[in-house]
Image (cartoon, rainbow, N blue to C red; front, side):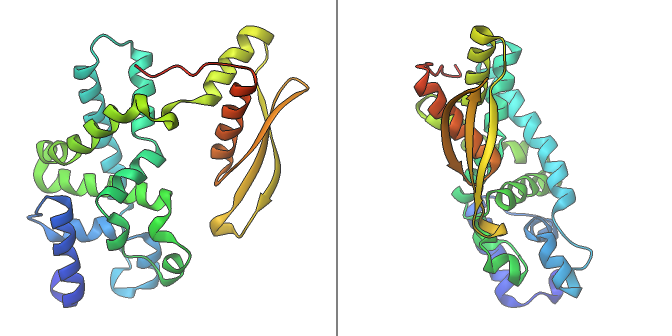
Length: 244
């Protein structure tokens, strides 16, 4: 496959290796990690090549590396607290930030349609591709290589969690308060949807029982609910706790 690639793509792979700080012995693994399924559907020469299987593998390797690191660093925390931190670190927004830090979107192979509708900046595509990169490095250099690549990003992320407001799970905070005070769980109602399918915005309202608390916007239903929960916590004067 690599022999048939044009020189511009080969140069792009070399440039991305420099951004990664890792040199692949098997360049085809690197290439596969960058091929989005939309590109393989559009390009006949890539018909059976995309990064989905590498993403699956990378997800498992990522989870192992993160858990090992958190276990060793926070030996005094409970299982539930470790799981909470891990869930935040491996969430789509966090992985998309990791991907952006290595300029991953620039090197992705996307269909023209996906590219023209902002695919290079879409969090879901970036997060999946980042996991595929981890899977590719693992196959090429083993667990130690994958760990060496991920740890600097992981350490920086964990160090920033307590000063980062986005690390607070306001939906959980609001739910715990609501159950303890009112014996019910909060409810969220979609008030409206805006924009085209590839860039949709949602407006969501948060309630406890019949009481309206707040409404907020988000780029997904989940984000909108989280933003509404955050405002609801302010209305109810619920203090946000830190992860550790």
